[in-house]
Length: 80
Image: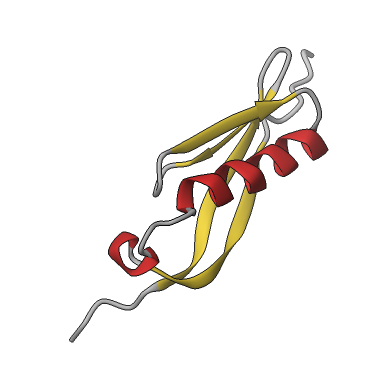
């Protein structure tokens, strides 16, 4: 059975000390921004530039993939 092409590229956003960092492990794209919104926009641009001119099927991707974004947060801990 042939491999199915992925319709989504998975990305994770993490909050650092000064910046948000977005990472797509599947295609090796990493970017950052001072705000969440800036980081998302930078991610869209970085993914588009990375995929420009590539044969998406060679990367296991269907035409016009979307980005599935997950945000990783640390819970607020209270000291008793």
